[in-house]
Amino acid sequence: MSVLDLSSWELREIKSTPVTIKELEEMHERSGSFRALFSRKSGQIKIRGIDSSSLEEKDYRALILDHYSFLKRPVFLTKSDIFIGSDKDNLARLYEYFDRSQKG
Image (cartoon, rainbow, N blue to C red; front, side, top):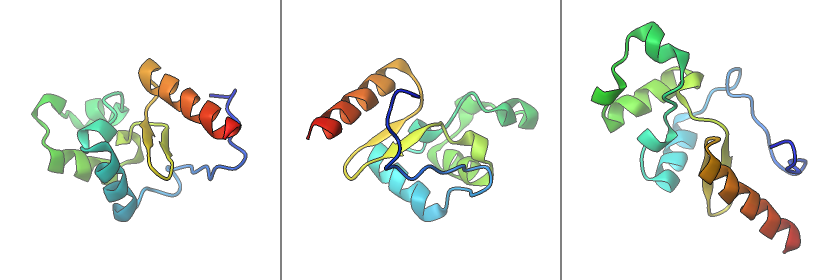
């Protein structure tokens, strides 16, 4: 990600400035689910003894709002797209987006 020019982007550290309900709802609208936004790698899952296989959409929403580590990161919001997480496919889409936006 360090190869991307993020100078014109608003970067946000969500530990000190948590995601608001409005922001989470916007991310949900774009992604189609709270599950897509949920980080299964959060250390809070083990600490809280959460069985993530039994979670429903309302649970994902509540957990993300409760603790920053439940939000999969990074999240990039553009005018029309959302890019969630650091998996290979998402990063490829993100690099394509940056490549198009720098050319256009």
